Image (cartoon, rainbow, N blue to C red; front, top):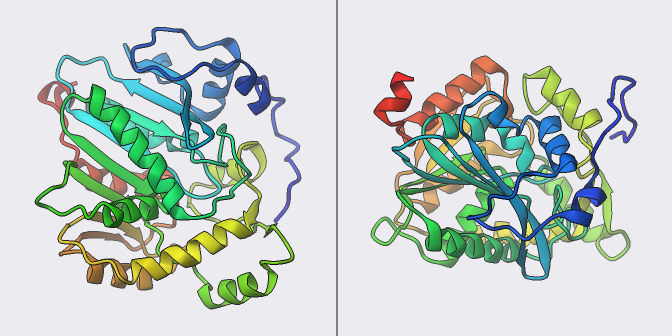
Length: 335
């Protein structure tokens, strides 16, 4: 892992501290325009959809949950026939701004989109990458679902990438969600985490170091065939977490143990790549197939871990899978 920056790294006209110093509490009904520094942040990550999609509205602010202030984005497409809402969760190290391709895909199909930075990630408060238990993530997700329940119109779709997928599965288990009582039109898991690669080595490292160090340096890997994205994440993304927190590894160990006992009469959708070198996808798919009732698995042999940030050709395959479960309105298809 390296924390150096590329010679091509642009000088930033925004910063996390600057945004947090002047941000506002999130409000679904707000018409407040984004500040200059917030707009600069959005441009840096390609979240400025209104520049090329007519009529898109963007709400941004923080939500107070369990002592955290969590950066929250809500996007509304310009359409008279809303198809529903997509709530999307990002993975470990990352943040919601890296879901820009997925957000745009959903907007173009007529969906409102809610995303937020997990505690200790992105613009949100909390120790970097730290969490005591994945159930804390679950409580946060439950809070956002309650917020949405008060404003929601149309079907609700839940999607998560990597750790985001683990959070969703933990939520489903904690709340004993089944096909009979599910409030979700679809549950879409992109390369969901059960356990990562080199699990035995990680367990040994955790049990030998947990009382002595609070984290270890992260190693960057080619998690996508999109070389520009891989370069951006390592060198040009100041919101990337660059250490693996010991507390997070402990929370992961407990999650893996709990997931072994999960049995749910529910059929989530799973999209998984065959060149994923971040998670132990063979073990993960075996466990998901055992623990859920006939999950719908879409396997893309050439895809790596960052499915929503893959090369254009592979990303189109990922989004074609999602399109089966996120139908567009006739007007959006015509447009």
